[in-house]
Length: 260
Image 1 (cartoon, rainbow, N blue to C red):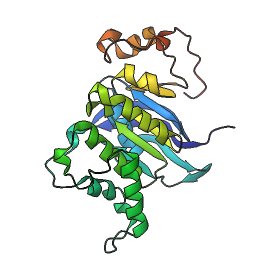
Image 2 (cartoon, helix red, strand yellow; image 1 turned 180 degrees about the vertical axis):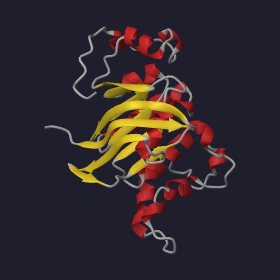
Image 3 (tube, rainbow, N blue to C red; image 1 turned 90 degrees about the vertical axis):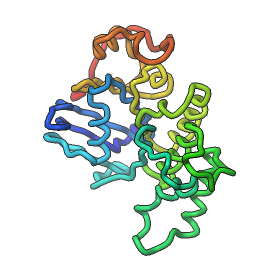
Image 4 (cartoon, one colour; image 1 turned 120 degrees about the horizontal axis):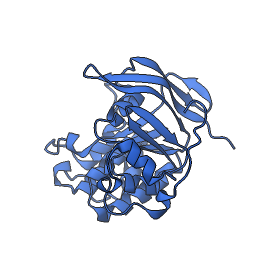
């Protein structure tokens, strides 16, 4: 069974602060894909994510969205922002955070429906946050805040969830919890995970894209250490934490499919 594409970037060029950041990027994200986007700081990961989210218009090229094989103007996307972009002093509870993920699904003057409140409760249980519904976000641990924001990204039942450097929220003890949640979420929808922590990403994703101005795509995660060193331009030990998983270091030859 062939998987249907949901997002397709063709020949995308993008600039940030008048500086060309992405050049001729071609990328397809498929239904129920788990795509890791890696790359050095300043390499264009954030710019690529903004283009996918529709927050930045490419200077050239096109972005297409699909639903069940048909081209659409847009698809629903959930977004988990970086930790340092959250105002933890903002007086909002876990319940309100998750509920806010439904804001675009109601009109300005209507209140949320009973079904929507029920969905919020279900997501809070799925995220393992029951009992913390009324707690202010400033009183949460990093891992709890991350799960509240992941719940917010998930509650609208999006086709794809985009996570920006999720490993900045948590210490290593909670990492397994996050990835087991993501594994469950991935059964229903695609995930795009943006990270500079190569070791972690390669253990969990199904496909990988390395962004450093240009984009290299691998339909699997068998990426050689030599290739990574060449793309990142620095010794691989400086990237990620600890040892890279052994299976990743299997050398292989690159046969790039056409157009990638």
